[in-house]
Image 1 (cartoon, rainbow, N blue to C red):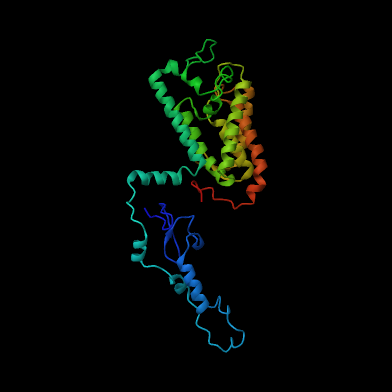
Image 2 (image 1 turned 180 degrees about the vertical axis):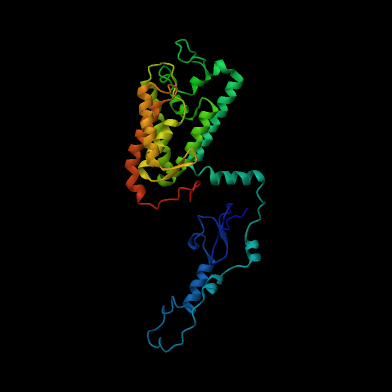
Length: 331
């Protein structure tokens, strides 16, 4: 892998200096940041032959009569001070080529660790794998009680150490965060992860990584608390990332209401129609008791939080250049 000629850091796509011909990282790509020798040579050359500094240090009399040298071409300017390949090899320290593990680690850092959406998806996947292992080792009965609504439900099951409930919220406060990344079964995890990948990437590019994480955690935590406080069942657990996803959906709707999406991957519509439809369906389901196993209060509260946060950021985001909705990994 190429390395920076100034600091020796390994870089995937090095910058080539047009004055000295060296390869540098993003921090030292400018001539003044790597003590470029070619920059001094080209400045001297311009003072002697070029037109940029042609009048520096020369008397005013006789300037018009003197013959002006021909200006340097663009190709000649960038060739001034450029080292040969052999000279660069002598100046560059010998380094062993990185192995397969270091190459994969570099790719992982450049793609995953720069995107909060992908980091959150990795956390969801890790927690789900831990849940799957606990289910295989501890058994279905100890992992999750068969009837959680029963008054004698076992609160020492593994699931209650990850997801919050009204009776265990004060004794196990960490569950208010871990419950966001925990899921009940594979389809629950897969659908939430798929939706978060698309709408989370679109919102993160518009508001930035820090604000996206702030919205995600705030909507996830507050929606879980709202869900377990509204449900009278003491053993009901708030499980899943859907409350945070509805927060992301609400903010994205305010910031980019006409963003085109494909419902079920084949029905085109603007995102504001989808959000209105989900909001109406959530309210009707909560009032009529339809689909009791779904956290409608978490969805509705997360949506309200996202709408409020998107309203706060909409002016700031609209001043920026709008990214393409098809750019999944960012610019």
